[in-house]
Amino acid sequence: MSEPTPLGHPMRKHFQFTPTYTPLNHGSFGAFPNEVRTTLHHYQSLVESQPDTFLRYTYHPLLYQSRQAVASLFKVPVEEVVLVPNATTGINTVLRGMKWEEGDVIVYFETLYGAIEKTVAYIEETTKAAGEPIEAHWPIEDTELVQRLEDTIKKINSKDSTNRRVRMAIFDTVVSMPGVRAPFEQLTAKCRELGVLSMIDGAHGIGHIPLDLGQLRADFFTSNIHKWLFVPRGACALHVPIHNQHLIRSSLPTSWGFQPMPKPPNDSIEKPKEIINPLPASTQPPFIAMFDWVGTHDNISYLCVPSAISFRSTICGGEERIMSYCRMLALEGGDRAAEILGTEVMDNSTHSMRDCAFANIRLPLRIGEGNGMVREGDKMAVAQWLGVRGTEEWETYFAVVLYRQQWWWRFSAQIFLEVADAEWGARVLKGLCERIRGGEWLETKV
Image 1 (cartoon, rainbow, N blue to C red):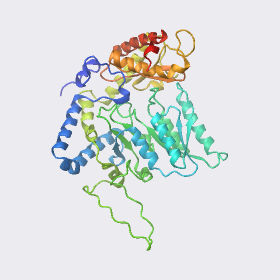
Image 2 (image 1 turned 90 degrees about the horizontal axis):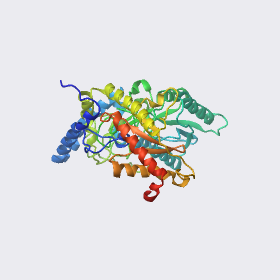
Image 3 (image 1 turned 180 degrees about the vertical axis):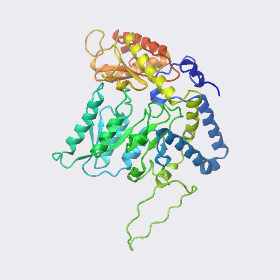
């Protein structure tokens, strides 16, 4: 058996990046290796050679193998895992599938991913549920974050809250922007203690940090597998324990696997006709069958999970080696970037929020009216300008967020990068920030 490829720049040969491209933002869309690309093309060729044969008879056993592989990483039964296109779809499936009642409240931290916050707003518009954001400013200690969740739930559930009750809490494994690890294990335990359903957005989860969903015992958990696990886009795992599956009435969209509730007998109403499914009968439990076929869509990426896990095991040396390297790179690369920029890395006293593959480095820019400062009205355009300049001038992308009146660069550590890449990115950003302070950016503001 051959030795794993050294982590760092030698890993680039397994990916399709152009020689001059520096991938500093893996966290947004991910990347997958050539070995997985071969698997993807193989299945694409099979489906095009015999579309009906593949989609009706070959696809589902292969889908089962992928679900089984994800379930093994999650440490849960395969009957509790389905695949969907992305984490936003996974959470939408849960929120739209629930039957919300008058007084139900969904709580979430203010750093919730924007698409999910908008989903909560949609639920508010279309159901009887209400959303309630929890103020929490990063950096923050784990204990304080958990306490804020508990205080919010108890306040809403108090007798003075006009019959409101917290039904669900949504929170992250690793927050998207800024990229920090959340104490999701403690938050989940607190929800269970207080009788609140936990919906975990693990978009940055599987392949990024160690997970044991059997031990975690969250009520709902979704995690993109097209980011940190090296599966082609878009693919995501949704975990729903068997005892909660009755809460989700439908896939998104509703399709052939949906089982309508029986209607009460009424002699004056004609018996509803039987809807015949033209696809082969499913051998899976009803919940799984709902997600096995949700309309014609290119789901070939789902079938690449075993190939991605094999690559991580044989070429990369296994999950622990990958995660340890990425965490080390985020720590060391983040610290060096902060030194070059003359700023700091976002952190708390226990360093728990940096226990992941992200580092958030503050940029040397300030908001104000003075010379070399960014005017209040221009502050939102800075991140866009930096993104465009990085792409057009330096063949990279800088994920920059304005958070609490300061700009932070989220550096994504990955197996094909080294500390030198974080240093290079910091030097480029330092020059771009000098151009912003000099006013040049206003001439090309996007």
